[in-house]
Image (spheres, rainbow over the protein chains, first blue to last red):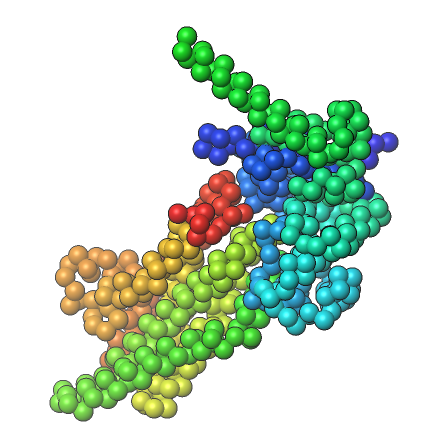
Length: 260
Length: 267
């Protein structure tokens, strides 16, 4: 029997004043699966993540988290979700412990005290519990963001460039921590990154987005072979360039048409 | 509504206040300065006036009530601005938090912060200037309640304006009480105003509170029917303010402003 997906995105479209940022995107994330969402800047990764997080209303399409329609029952859908994003640091004027307690209450985590203590230990944050989050290093802030993201034991974890601007050692720890959650089969992860080594190492499946559309999809290790490239990095460049050439050809054809 | 999520919003503000004297001091400092300033003015007026009119309840009492309204409004807007300044909208609104729960959290915070100011004002005006608000007893409560509801409505509407126009619109919010005060008849009866200003004051709940308080201080029975009009208006404005906030929030969801709310992204 096929396993029901944790996240199901169907025909997602988002248009901003005439610009189609996400164009008919459909994909799923299954329990125990890490899906990588990659693509050049402006490809629509963060727009997709924001739509899944319920902070951006799609122009059309449907998002379901464990079968709960996000548009119909936002609160129930989001209570099974959590996220960490490099551009959304936790309030810097609260301490590490205060942040975890505030967000723990927000996600109605019980028993909260125990869970906070456990995460402080798991993410090596005990010695910073009374330190304001704003004065932590990038790596420590990332660890705090991921600890917050795991507060409610989410079924769907959204990680938007979680290892950007942190050292390789901390990045490896974070990847191991996330993989452990996924290996238990409890959660599914949607992971965006510009680091193709990381995507290859962590993701079970990768979705290449370019100009709002999924242009390539599959197992990152097999994709390299299938597309006859040396690495996922090369495939990234190839995909990004192909789209660029398509656009240039399209623009040239349109210009020729207008001249004619 | 979920109590835990409302508590989260209140807890965040409590943590901020607990660790920050610069946030606690303004809760008391400005009202103390106002009471001292107006207290001495009323004392001086009582000395030089031979009219036998007691300026203490008329002026100092009015200042106290008006400051209470302003503090309630600022309680809501300041709590909201903390999230604006720390760019926290994405973290909060990507959680299972309802707008009603977020606003309820801001209101509970405003109750706590405005009570601190009210207690400081009552203590100072009673102990130093002999203002005897206590003699009016529980009859004072409905007047304060109308001002409280109006202050919450103004605060929520102010937060909605900043959510729509961006952090740079903060300066539009601070002068709102000052702009309303000439119409609200804080220091004088509404009857002294020109007709067009009276028309404005008739739609402002505080004008019914101050007219009523003047009647009570003058030894007349409280005009409960008029206060009921003020109460009704304040409830309508609160409903409108919440509707406005929810509508602007939906607009921000459609445009993606919640996710990238900052001075740079919202013009």
